[in-house]
Image (cartoon, rainbow, N blue to C red; front, side):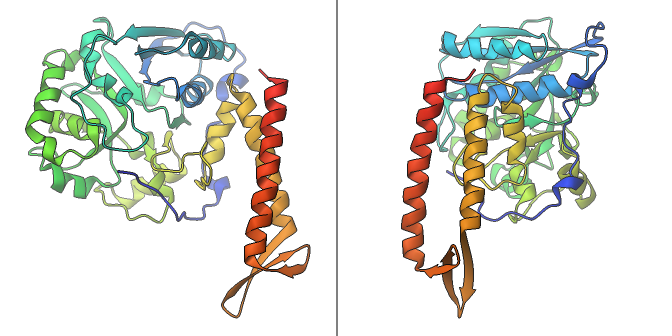
Length: 372
């Protein structure tokens, strides 16, 4: 199942409070941290670039009272990509641990949504590979961007709960579909604050597998449905600002319990932006009003070359928009090229040819230069 957003609200972006990379402005970057924030990400080799953007946003927006330890399940990450991740230490120092999970069998779990890979299931095995001395773990999807210091989220009290989660934008219909017995909401699993101390008291992976086997016929959102089922009545709802999904900036209908005041606050004060749905910021045709946040943090990573290509192509598109102007005359779309009226068909062919040629030249030049 693929979800795509085609219509977006127009926001005054100057009113949205976004991350200011405050670590770069700290005068004392070497003082001793008072907490370690353990974060799990689960990229495959195709998603390391986007994972690096998430990691960079964490490193740049957490102050020096926090030390960051990243935990990455490894099911065949290349040494080349691991080196790219290691280069993020140019921003600030952090720890990173890779866990070999090739021994786990994921073959019986469904992959019924486009762009979703088996890596989404790695977190179901956290009891099997995470060290016993870690009591909580923040899981982040690799299509998220952190905009606030995570210490506020990290220190939320989870006593008696298996996890802290944010309500999904389609919470109400999902609640009807999954028929949960104890929860009055469904959550989005792209940001989960796991309480490992409580999770170790249960056979977590067995409960996940059992839930899938008993409810496979109603599962459409893969691991998200499984986690909602296992955590039924045992998870704490977090402020929505910690998982602000794409639909909140779009004209899609929201179907959730969270009140309008909190939704408004999340939109204008996002703690974590979650680029759910397609197209993603790195995909052609993305119109998410905050897509530039992804590219802002990419510019701090070893993939900054991709940012340079994006910026150049963006500039070319602006030039195109000045050369071509589109008007509606007598219910027909009329295009002007440098003030001269031409057919819409001719315009599409001309723009496609120009863009294709420029795109090939851009990629060729950047491959030759090999920026780092």
